[in-house]
Length: 272
Image (cartoon, rainbow, N blue to C red; front, side, top):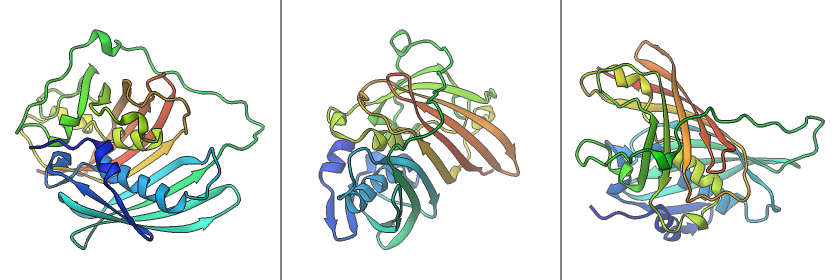
């Protein structure tokens, strides 16, 4: 399987009016469909390409909501973009992801710049865990793990290995892209790409493999300047509630400099 770095996928995109076309290889697959983070990341890039051409400096992605409607297979993936409203401070943009004529995902992105506020800025600090430099790298296991993980270096500070037969409700992973062109990508797009990496920790308690699937994903982002996108990011994940075959999953993504980059929630189905 030939690996196509994410930066190459972006570099080869083609725009046709309000639609942006991408080529996704088998190396970005996760089961029957493309990895959700890469689907949302190309959609975020397409929204920026189509809607953001005339935006002033400082406008960034603040929120992204995605409904995973159907399978997005490898091949040509087209993202149709529509500006729903361009206000004085906030722009709301819709993206519809198609593969082979099939609707795969629908996304809503909210873009804005900072504004004056009576509130003094305050940021949460990441809880202390072992630094990535002190941890071994998790090896990729072909045929066992989804192909998209080949693009990532992962070091587990607190592991919740899927289908390991030992219940763990939280995980902490350090991760970064094995992509020499990462520095040329907008940090918000990298945050979207990395924000969906860990499986929900709830499946760590299962002893046998069963299908799982994300139904919805909501990501609230903090626009960051001066981020070393090629550095070690960190994602803290938690299975908050498990009932009726669904998991309510929450995550916090931290930038390499320790600042909070995104808050995420998902509804995940677990079959079997």
